[in-house]
Amino acid sequence: MAKTYNICLLPGDGIGPEIIAEGVKVLDAVGVKYDTAFAYTEALLGGCAIDATGTALPDETLHVAEASDAVLLAAVGGPKWDTTDPAKPRPEQGLLGIRKALGLYTNLRPVQIFAALADASTLKPEIVDGVDMMIVRELTGGLYFGRRERFYDEEGCGTHGAAGQRAYDTLEYREYEVERIARQAFEAARKRRNKVTSVDKANVLETSRMWREIVHRIGAEEYPDVELEDLLVDNTAMQLISRPVDFDVVVTENMFGDILSDEAAQITGSLGMLASASLGDGTALYEPSHGSAPDIAGKGIANPLAQILSVEMMLRYSFNLGEAADDIRRAVTAVLDEGWRTGDIKQADTPADKVVGTVQMGDLVVAHL
Ligand code: NAD
Image 1: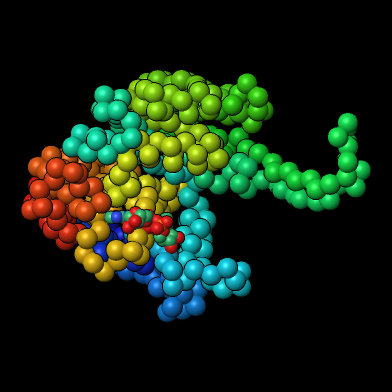
Image 2: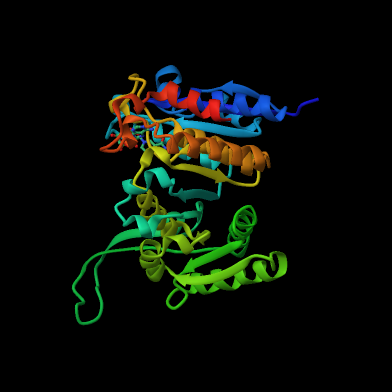
């Protein structure tokens, strides 16, 4: 009998419900082709959850997510819930809350250039042609979660010793945190081109020196088949835009990853095409990198491809259905090669009859599957 995977659907706000419907359509098509069944349970997250329950992450949603094999999220937020009142709930609390509750310590962000869209990049086509990398960012440690303080320093110090404000943040990692993210990176590399670039600042930071040692130990002991190189973060920032084609998996700590993943995303120039995955040791979460695009919500023109590519990641990383995942990627590539575009990725020379809406784009991908 076909295996059934239970998926928690979180459509969220704005264009969320429109694009997630296309993701489900693609999953259903994969199910038919590969004799696999997907069962869905929809739950509330973000602004819609605030409206219905007063909180961005209702307990019920968390229970459904925890009981599922994977979570497919669209996007949350919108002007309706924008508030500067710290006492009021905000949609993104739902996102942060669910990531924390599911213990998601790894963020995977693929950066891939589809040849048909190469001219959307701000870099020269010959530089971006063939770019296909995966940024693996540690999500729960480092500077963003370290001890921090801001205070008035009465005494001051040194030659500029005047009294004044003083603040610090601490960058701290524990061995197990580096070990587990290193394993995620090596595992991802094995599903790709078998190469990991570990990014640090080992010439300055003690955390980086420890990071480098641990990544090398895990690599040598458990993944001798995967090529490993080290790169300093400042150098990486340059290499990412001068020779992006050479990168396969890039693994790094939280803040470096935050910055480098945005830089790398910009290489593609197409927000509506970028998916991401957040993994821990249990249920993982898959979502587009973009937001809820309230400016185009309800118009049927949102690009569903980032959502569809997040489904591809789900099949690959949560369900080990690599062949089906490859199939989705091939289908998306074929649709783009045929010239089909949603409004956000249309080019100056795209004929009007090749510009399609959300539902048609989903249908085209399904037809290719
Ligand atoms: P956004 O990504 O929603 O939109 C930026 C621009 O890109 C807009 O012009 C939008 O129309 C366009 N765009 C985004 N996705 C698109 C798609 N799939 N197809 C076509 N065009 C698309 O970012 P924003 O405008 O800064 O934020 C809007 C709301 O989304 C805010 O409330 C923000 O907090 C929220 N947000 C949520 C997430 C998330 O859920 N992970 C991420 C970022 C922003």
